[in-house]
Length: 553
Image (cartoon, rainbow, N blue to C red; front, side):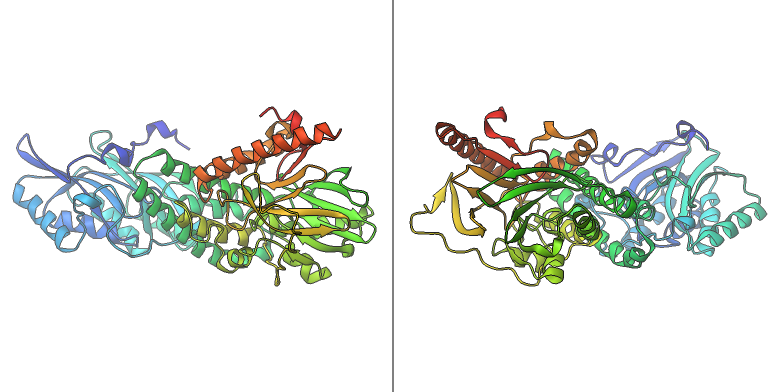
């Protein structure tokens, strides 16, 4: 492959975001018009543009299009001997609705037409091709793409940098069509050099014109077992919703840091799902810590699955309870592991979950369906599962979180419980509030009482913290994590979660407030426990559990 530094550079959109809609200049006996146009993401769209220019004797001196950045936006510079020729092209483009107004120049396309999805990597081809700098040259090349039904997903031609060479990427229906297109270019006398051609061993990151969603889904093929690939069409549909949500958020946020964070969160949440998918079956490992005595009858073991989330197995003479369950795709692996190590999973009669995210409640439904376990969660958890929306429409990032919830749930095998039971009522001697959090009920595991403290909703809807005042222990889910305790592998997984916690909370401001409230609350609890000769403990959703006095807050 030719070094990328030798390829004509496509300027980033930000470089022209503040440029005028159209500039017209006189240059050595000719006229030059530079502008941005919008086109539908379909085969033949750029060929129609090139034909229009060639029909007026207008030369395309610069054409920059990258579908991966924006599936509709094309940057153009056109040259002609007479200004009237350029005016004719511009008038035609305007009449067809291809010229944006001032509010659309650097944003999303005015068309509501959904961009196409590329589903076969073998049908993608990137190459450099020799061209002549004269009217009709790009029209002839684009016309051959159109004849084969090939959609241009990236094109870069800049006369100022390399007047004799263009770079193009096209998406066809498969490997056969790619081979036929290359044969046609050879027969037509084109000189070209293939830069990237999709096949089983091709590095998707080298492909130009793919969206981040498509690149991820192609990578997903390497880790998804064949029986799960039948849901690929649905995942592509979900990914379009994610793309739209991100576009809406960027539009609302401009170029702020929050907008950039949204893009990073999107990549991280997909990477998290891929990490889980790639660590099942023969590649599954489970780390167990404990036992820890929580009461006279209850001993606790912490189970950490490969991507780092914790589940807590509470064992007592009458049975077992599971506090938080991991991604659903781990269910069979975890049950097999428990059975092989002396824990009969059929004895799990109760499931508690801190919140309904896929990595904390992923197989609550499987435990209920297979072993008849009762499931206790916040009363809003049923709505989260039903609507597949971890925010329930609340907070500034609700639009992004809705498709994220759906995508991760589907990728990770989330099975929602069919029935969620209410918490038991608390006694009259239990205060209504603790640490600033409302006490909404209690759950009993043998002689261990856990009070459900309702979150303010900073991280996710339907979040609770389970607190035992007698022993000073609290299960916090994705709050009060101890990142320093992680192994390098788990630290990499936690970096994903850390990004999620700072960027896709229902409300990051409320989340930060809650974190401070929890720290103050548990600091006071620690002092009380120390006075009694005990130690207050935090059992988080990721990382090791720890004594509050060791936290260093």
